[in-house]
Structures are given as C-alpha cells and as structure tokens.
Length: 154
Image (cartoon, rainbow, N blue to C red; front, side, top):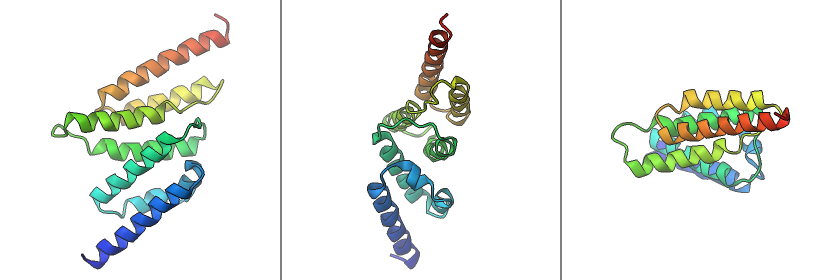
C-alpha cells in the first residue's frame, strides 16, 4: 500500500467518524471545503464516501429547507448518478435511485411551493438517467399542485 493510499484511508476514516458523530448533515456540509475535499479522493473511494453520506442523510427524519444544504446534497447525489451507465446492473441502479428518492422526499419549504418546485426542477436536470427518480419527481410535483390547491382553497 502506497503512502497516498494510507493517507486517503485515514481521511476516509476521519470523514466517516465525523458523519457518525455529527448531529445532523447541516453541520457536516457546513465545512466549506468538504465537497472540494471529496474531489481529491480516488474515484472508487469518492463513490463510497458519497454513498455513505447519502445513507447518513437518508436516515435522518428532518425535512430539508436550507438552500445551501439541498444544493450540496444534490451534488453528492449527482456523483452517484454519474457513475451509472449502460453497463451498470439493474439492482445498483435501483439502489442509487432509492437513495436519491429518499433524499428528495425530505425537501420541504413549507408554504413556499415555488422554492420546492425549483429544487425538483433542478433535480430533474441532474438525474436524467434514472427513470425511477423522474417518476418520483413527477409524483412530488403533482403533490405540490394538490397542496397549492388546498392552500388557496380551490
């Protein structure tokens, strides 16, 4: 094992520990250089770390309404999306799709439906290769329309 591999393993261990001890993802994503740091990791290790982050976020019950945090989470999810190609096995596509759907279901700006719709629109552009995610986004947008109808009382 080379010196670089050892350093990356230690950094990976450190990031996983920070995720495990962090109260919520906003604390973790609050580190300005976290996403930049991920870019220095080798591709396989970066994918594994992004997947761990997505699992960590998916396990939390809190709704997401902070624009910076949502953008950062979508970028992490985009990293997982980008590794999917025509050779990727179906179970892997389903697994990644389910992780992304779990994250998108947490987006909620309350009565500001336009912000929520904007996030879903951005997500539609980011995850074009995942049909299951696109179907979920359509359902989320339809639910927004229903919510809007209820808010304005028909």
